[in-house]
Image 1: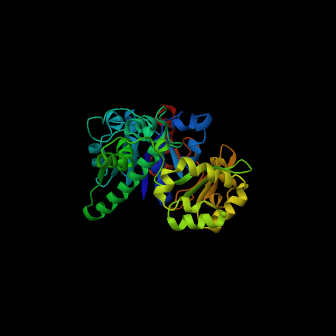
Image 2: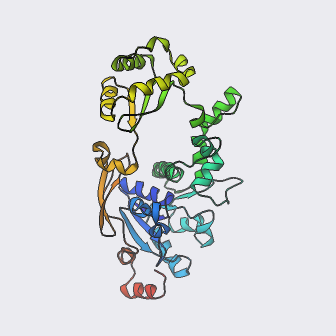
Image 3: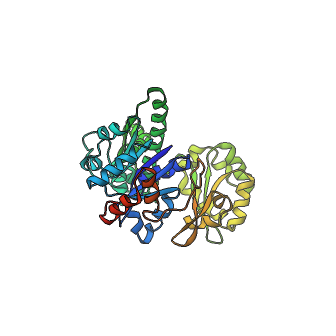
Length: 372
């Protein structure tokens, strides 16, 4: 199957990447000369294009020009799926409404990812962090004094995941009806779904919740401890059986004072410093060995790049080349279908246009006039 991705930065490219891992041929339509905005990002976002765009064929088309729009429509006629995350009405304003697309391809499935889905705010332009703020996610993630963003483009990527689910559902439906479908996925609706537990809890208990990092969690021992070698290790004890094993492996003398999770939770201010005194005597390796032996959930605090040397994480990465450098990138939990490295801008324009029936003379003409 073939998918066209008219996407930039994160959401659209994530959907295209996931479809490529599912075996789709993905043609990435970009603006001539400049391409996806992610190509020019620097600093902490400089890895965006390299990560989200392997397995894609870059084709440059200026579809704001009539000739370019005609080329894109011809390409749409050969495709199963079209993805865009350009914002409300962007394709329509260029003469590429879904009704027009259907005339060329009645079976086309069109996935539009935007800030807000259909409703009062559908025309509002937005980004990942504003969506986190509007939805309450930034409030729940941060502190009372400082709402915080999640440390990844979580809403962009999750909206793309929901979009891919919707595309696969539409493909199944098309097998029965022969008809395509337009699917709109809102980033706000994605974040709203993630906030469902908190919205529900508020209604059931009748009072406002504090940010999750202010109010603690449901368990008495669910916290970081600093080891002798100054590593931070998070430890989670969530059942009474785990508490007994925890006490045994660390030879704790005060276990009987905290027999239930309710008591441990209510006396966290006393218990956590006592446990820090115990666990602070171990280096991280020794502490982890004891936690492993008791089958207690834990995690050593990592920076993302630390995972390049983690035996489990590094086995979930693949090697690709970008800008002349070999890099390792994680693949999705569904697996990967490695076809090619992230493309240079317009790498596949001639190949795809020839496939559509254009001669070299016609392609030269369009290149000269900035159409492709």
